[in-house]
Image 1 (cartoon, rainbow, N blue to C red):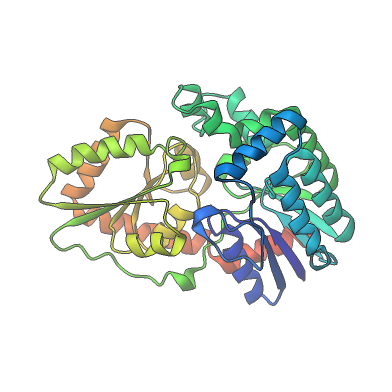
Image 2: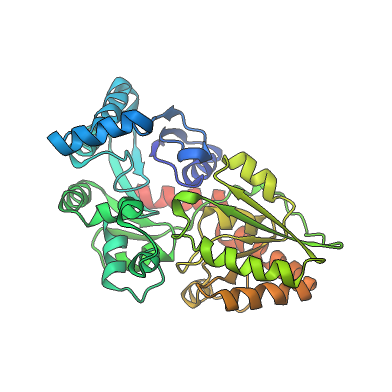
Length: 378
């Protein structure tokens, strides 16, 4: 098949592309490089007028006229190469707002893709209309909406989530769903809001290219290494404030037994290199299921503090931990970390189970096969 993947989140489409290529497909990846993470893209888009003085001018023009310069410039970038984005058997959008444009320009780009390709599918792999609105309507559900409702995140810092509650994005959502063959969730958090929707085709777990993560048993000598990677843009959304407070306690309690590595806003390759030596990785704590960063760490046999709720354990019929279910509770996090530091053999045991879980449920070749089956049958 000839496949166009649009957008990138945490290497999801890169891993899927690698699996699809192994299966003999022709694959093109179009989109942004996921900010500072700088993932490879065949046709990279650059968000312009988004920093410094130009951003201030853009905001002023938007307030005065309603015209979004960044959206227009993204549309022009697409238009310049649009001959490369037609004639595909399958197009897959990573999100309802894959091009980060306003309604007017996003719809123009999508209209071209719908008219000039055979089938278009949508992933629910991040914030979108269904996910965001479900969690505002169900505040008890563990999600990124919780810290916002608790007053920890200002509206301006939550704008990329709140936009999906606007009328224009409801219109964009409706337009996309009228034209796609179906929507696929990449984990339980996105599966829950889509259940019983007529266009929902089911959950396909995120792919992990295991050839990039050879099995390597954790070695623990004198000290246990804890890694905490921080993305300032999603600081509260990921629960980093709870992790940092827990680490302050752990640092004092086990000063002679641990090393703590912290990074902020580094490119993907730097991030990976810095956490390779870690035994424990602190990822995120609002949700049911893991994202790509946690899955890659689990593939390396590390103990990851991440989303691993009862719903996740039930979905995969797990009877033993493959990750630590992180929660917004400092005392709980301290207790969980303390247990592992005092019982290093448990770190090795969980790490081994984590690796086996990834091999069974997230292998990129199996996942690529699942996607091609869904695409062909719908």
